[in-house]
Image: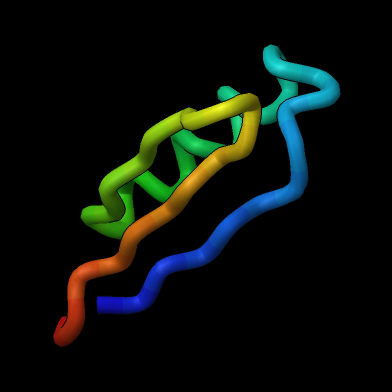
Amino acid sequence: MQVIIVEPFRNFKHRIRVTKQYERMKAKIEVFNHYLYIEFEEGD
């Protein structure tokens, strides 16, 4: 598993647009303490 911690959600609506791209990569996306965590599946 590859986990990426993205910068804080300063512009939440803009970040949501970014997460849509990651959803196509089969990524698990969570928001915790105003930080965006993206967890990629291995393979593909």
